[in-house]
Amino acid sequence: MLPSYAVRQAALVGLAVNAVRPVGGYLGSVPAFAAGWLTSELAPQLLAVAATDTAAEVLWRRPRGRGSRLGLALGAAAAGGLGYLVYAARKAPAQVEAALVEGLGADYADLLDSERPPDLVPTLSEIARPFRLHDPERVKVHRNVNYVEGGRRARLDIYVPRDVELSEAPVLIQVHGGGWTFGAKEEQGLILMARMARAGWVCVAVNYRLAPKYPWPSQIVDVKRAIAWVREHIAEYGGDPSYLTITGGSAGGHLAALAALTPDLPDYQPGFEDADTSLAACVPFYGVYDLGGITGDRHAVEMRDKFLGPVVFRKSPSTHLEDFVTASPLAHVRKDAPDFFVLHGVNDSLVSVRQARTFVAALRDKTDATVTYAELPGTQHAFEVFSSIRSQHVIRAVQRWLEWHRAGWLLEHRPAAPESTAG
Image (tube, rainbow, N blue to C red; front, side, top):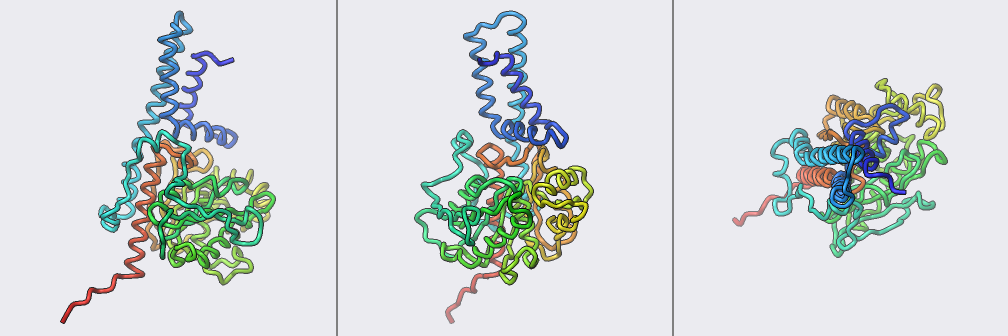
């Protein structure tokens, strides 16, 4: 039986409150994330549902009595809360543009293609269709290419623009998240890869072996094997093997950042130690940067002791702490690090925003890299997995950053030949 109008609206109020101020604590982090993530990014759709429900209550159900007045009060509160979430999401353009200007300079757009500058304004259809993540009419996908012998965990997908002949196109490698224990290449990073492929990039989404069946460091070894394969074979798909960038979210953000900072770590390249796994740039979304509890942060230590140790590493940090430290991107920040664009939500219940702040501070203090940081207020984990007001604006900013980076890289590595003059 359908719950009463008052109960339905009360549930929406609870969801909105949790989205604005997520429930705290280790045990509450997962449900707080699940509820807050969906509510924050689907706020326009939920607001439409709430308004329709209230209109039906007023026009057709003819509320009378105290209970009905309470229901309408809850309906007004739900509409207000969801409306606030829509308002907060609409601030994303200013937030990401401020991050780009702060990280790259006010004139960063001068490097972009003046004839085809990446826009920052999504269309209404992109917002109204949150689960339409791929663009098969304009993007072709080469699916399930093996980068090493094995089953589906040893495969990758390659996204290219349809009916376009590519040559030396920039390459973006996407690493999925899922707590190192689940997830697949077909599930994440799809909006970004579709945009970049339409812009003439080659995008590669990789699978990797999952814990606990395959404990750490199987995951980073596979990601590096995939990078080595891309370096060797991507020219066959029109990509430029000399310019590889990487991105990923959550565990994928961790793996992307770790790969970018450890191109010469033989322990993570067993049997292919001499392969070139260096990367030109890294764009981690809500990544994990401290697996060893290096900073002493309570949230990082709890993750290490209660989840990473028994499930991912299948080792105790009390006896194998160095393995956890070595797996932390924070431990590998070095002077010659590649450029980074780090993105993280303030309301992230699964990975504290403090990890991103500490990581960015270390990059800016210890490296010569260009480090751009977008900290997004009111934003949960996994915010860009499906299409929303916030995700569409942020993805467009990432495109701008990547296009800026590629343009600068070309100027440095392939300067245009001087024009000849007739004598």
